[in-house]
Length: 49
Image 1 (tube, rainbow, N blue to C red):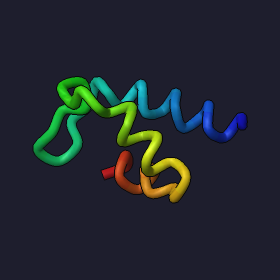
Image 2: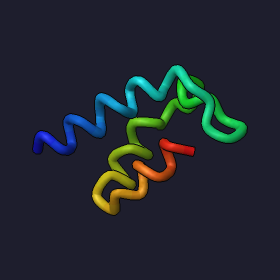
Image 3: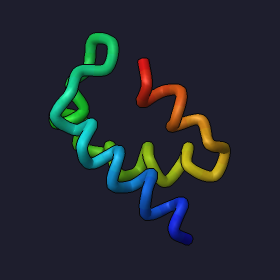
Image 4: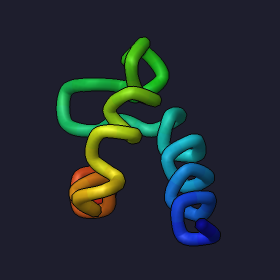
Protein backbone atom coordinates (compact mmCIF):
# COMPACT_ATOMS: atom_id res chain seq x y z
CA UNK A 1 0.00 0.00 0.00
CA UNK A 2 2.85 2.35 0.79
CA UNK A 3 4.27 1.57 -2.61
CA UNK A 4 1.09 2.74 -4.33
CA UNK A 5 1.09 5.94 -2.27
CA UNK A 6 4.69 6.56 -3.31
CA UNK A 7 3.87 6.08 -6.98
CA UNK A 8 0.84 8.33 -6.62
CA UNK A 9 2.92 11.08 -5.06
CA UNK A 10 5.49 10.77 -7.82
CA UNK A 11 2.81 10.96 -10.48
CA UNK A 12 1.28 14.04 -8.89
CA UNK A 13 4.69 15.72 -9.01
CA UNK A 14 5.09 14.69 -12.64
CA UNK A 15 1.85 16.47 -13.55
CA UNK A 16 4.00 19.59 -13.74
CA UNK A 17 6.45 18.07 -16.20
CA UNK A 18 6.29 17.15 -19.87
CA UNK A 19 6.25 13.55 -21.00
CA UNK A 20 6.92 13.20 -24.70
CA UNK A 21 4.52 15.55 -26.48
CA UNK A 22 2.06 15.65 -23.59
CA UNK A 23 2.00 17.71 -20.43
CA UNK A 24 0.49 15.47 -17.77
CA UNK A 25 -1.28 18.49 -16.26
CA UNK A 26 -3.36 18.68 -19.45
CA UNK A 27 -4.28 15.00 -19.45
CA UNK A 28 -7.70 14.98 -17.85
CA UNK A 29 -7.69 11.24 -17.26
CA UNK A 30 -4.14 11.08 -15.89
CA UNK A 31 -5.53 9.50 -12.73
CA UNK A 32 -7.21 6.77 -14.78
CA UNK A 33 -3.96 6.15 -16.61
CA UNK A 34 -2.20 5.86 -13.27
CA UNK A 35 -4.77 3.37 -12.01
CA UNK A 36 -4.52 1.34 -15.22
CA UNK A 37 -0.74 1.06 -15.29
CA UNK A 38 0.29 1.00 -11.64
CA UNK A 39 -0.69 -2.66 -11.28
CA UNK A 40 1.58 -3.59 -14.18
CA UNK A 41 4.23 -1.18 -12.87
CA UNK A 42 4.48 0.31 -16.36
CA UNK A 43 3.87 3.80 -15.03
CA UNK A 44 7.38 3.96 -13.56
CA UNK A 45 9.32 3.66 -16.85
CA UNK A 46 6.66 5.80 -18.54
CA UNK A 47 7.09 8.52 -15.93
CA UNK A 48 10.90 8.51 -16.17
CA UNK A 49 10.96 9.28 -19.91
